Structure formats: C-alpha cells, structure tokens
Length: 226
Picture 1 (cartoon, rainbow, N blue to C red):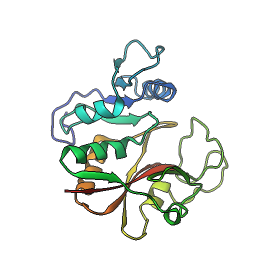
Picture 2: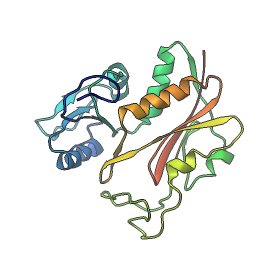
Picture 3: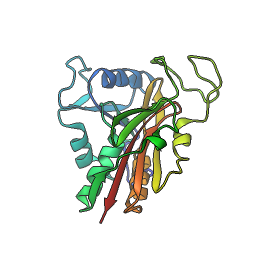
Picture 4: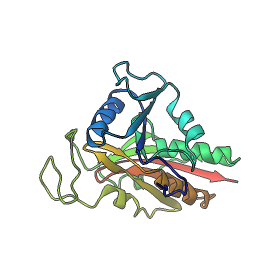
C-alpha cells in the first residue's frame, strides 16, 4: 500500500494520540471500537496507569516528541490531539523556529474575536470559540444539518466561518478537525503539512492559526520573519 506522501506503509492503520489523560484514554477506547485493527501510540509525560496494556505508550512531552518524530516519512495515518494545548499552532511555531525564523505571538484584537460565537480569551494571543453555550454530548456524531443537542439547524460550520476573517493584516489558516469517532476529533498528516506550507509563505503577516470542527475552535495569533 502506498501512502499519500509517497512512501510504502503497512495496510494496518496507525494512530498517534497526543495525551494519555482522561481525554486520551477515551479517544483510545472509542477508536479501538471503530477501528479494532489499528495500532495506537499514546504520548504523554505522565500517562494514566489504566491505559490498555496492548498499546504503545511513550512517556515524553507531547509537543517535543511530535516535533521530533513527525516527518513526511512517519508511519502514521491519524493524529488525535488530547492535551490542553493547541497542537497545530505549537508545532508550527517550533517548525518555523527550527528553520531559523524569528517567531513571536501576536495579540488578537477584541474587535476580531467578537466576530465569533461565545469567544473566550485564553491569553492575549489565543482564544477559543464555540456555537455551544451548553455542555455538548460526549458522543456527538457531528451531523452537517443540525445540532444533536438542540435539534436546531446548524449554523455555518465554524471552521468555514473562521476562514472568512477579514481584519487588518490578519490571515486565517484553519485546520479542519475530522471526526474519527463520535466525540473524537483529529487530522490527517497531510493536513498539517499543507498548513505549514501555507504558513511558511506568509512571512511578516499576522497569522491566525486555527483548529476547528463544525462547532468549536481554538485560534492562535503569530508572526514569523526570516
């Protein structure tokens, strides 16, 4: 079997779960039900002790390990972030810094943030946004047409909405979170490489690096120069 990145890989799917706490453990349980033949690797500095014995566990800092081991030749088919960080943004910052670029966080103006539903500022350069002002069902199947909690029609997908940002010199680069199991989101390796390629080309711009599904998202502001 040939991967989309050109290498030869096993026909058995492999998933990296970044985070071995409550959310990582739940992701493993649900993914094993939907894809019982897939290989699982869980990466966490201090993983839960009750993770299944038959999966590979790597005791390491998630972002550091991911930056070191995620390459175009890496044998991984799916990536599930389950750490209290913004994996895509943190990885891009490290990749750009490793290329000897000057990378800095950029404060996101209130006027921009309030274009989005229920925004919460986590730091001057990071915010989260969500259509929900309630606790979503943990097993939401994320249908396109309606919300499973309210049964009301779903507004424009949040990942699509974030892509429409037009504000000063900010440029949105949004990674769509794919649903691999009910309530378990992640992305394919090629999605991250495309995001990095776009970021590299925008030296000097204020980038809004976002990860979002249909209802929830997280966004970081950053800028890099050569």
